Amino acid sequence: MSTASRLSLAVEDGTIAWPEVARVAVFAPRTGADLSSLPKDRTQIITRFRPDWEAFQAAGWDCVLEAEGQYGAAVVFATRAKALCQGLIAEAASVSDGIVVVDGAKTDGIESILKACRGRAEVSAPLSKAHGKLFTIDAGSDFSDWALAEHMTVDEDGKTFVTAPGVFSADGVDPASRLLADALPEKLGAQVVDLGAGWGYLAHHVLRRESVQALHLVEADHVALDCARQNVSDARAAFHWADALTWAAPGPVDAVVMNPPFHIGRSSDPGLGRAFIRSAARMLSPRGQLFMVANRHLPYEGDLSAAFGEVREIGGDNRFKIVQAARPARTRG
Image (tube, rainbow, N blue to C red; front, side, top):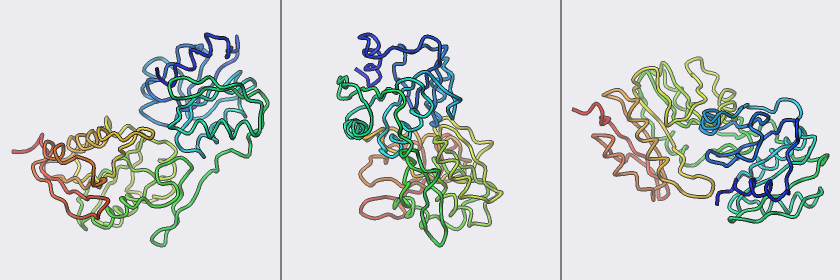
């Protein structure tokens, strides 16, 4: 049973009753969530993650980046990042005139969130099912002190970078990205893509090279991309809120740099990195090259060999490996 199935069960047993006329806001549902119990014509999905946006929009749901006015009820799907989850609850409570429903898996920290909510508001008895819980918070509860900070900062290389709660590596530069930045050659070519650009750390280093004429930052997390816009002011940078697996470059590119994700929630999923590798190979020119960092234990070698004619490790440490790949398969000859 999926996490979202708890939502349907709660409606079926009368734990939740949606307002008859007012709209319902749904914060951060993931692709595949069962929202069938919601009034589709009066529901707005608030998501900042592009693949989820595209999936729900394709299914006919109204998707927005920010809440629009007041709602009769709100649903929050718990996130692994506690600060982000608390921020979403604060946002939901501020725009809902009725209950706030919180639904999440144990692996996403729902027990901790439930305990924190109980300490400050009237909370229903939780519905426990499928390794997770769902509970409701009474209307009018004040969670304003949980509101997300507009930004956080990270200092590195004499520069202050803007980050935000919930984005990847919000508290400091990711050590794998730092290794990759230090290993990049001076000549990357004119057209470069930062695939899964995050808040712009790698882009900052790529744009130190005068030979780069255009750098495309491709990032699925809208919040992270907003941070990147603040961190990278170079006119050569172009920002794309897009799914890295489906984004199409305007033309063949000379280099792709990337530190691909390999987690869905708390579960490791090397399939994400494999898909990034295939995506990079598709957009590279015949002479283009991939520069990639990954955890050393991840089994990407077969995928790299299938997608590229030349693959070699050019650096790393006991935790991470840095790979350079050339001759993308579709242009190999």
